[in-house]
Length: 232
Image (tube, rainbow, N blue to C red; front, side):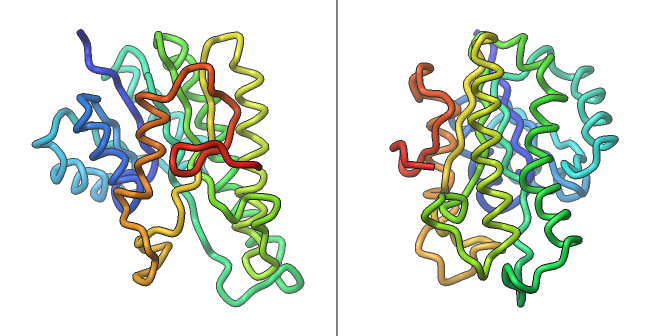
């Protein structure tokens, strides 16, 4: 049997790296993307003992970068079984909903929401060639209606919108048999989460790996934490 192929955006560190590692351990080929090709290659070299890793330069906020990545991968793979939209930013230091400017809102939505939508659109031809295509959007408890915080404005709103996009993508791709879910990794010890977070990157990655590999195919358009459905 051919190995399944997964792409993880922002897979060079943190939760994305842990997701890539877990998928390799399950026998998947993994495409790691980073805005820096050098960083993608460094991450790939750390993981290559576990299986086949393809490093790709990709900035999800730039359509031209996405297009170039698609063209590059078309020469290396014949399909995509899993797309994990993990790349994101958390830039709300020193601002709240009353002080944040339009520029910061724009940049956060571009990275955390619009990038994931554009990735699905661009990689759809490769996903359509899979017999078991799955898309996982890495969201946050800050994207839950009851988790919104006025002190984390652009991040909360961008993840709330990502959850909405997950519902719409699941609807739009249902007839194609492509599964789409969002997941919350919890508060994880990463550059974004900080050193006092209670969860390891591996714990944060677990639900995304499960959704990519084992979760029942009837489950789509839902929001997950610790392998259980939570409310949007």
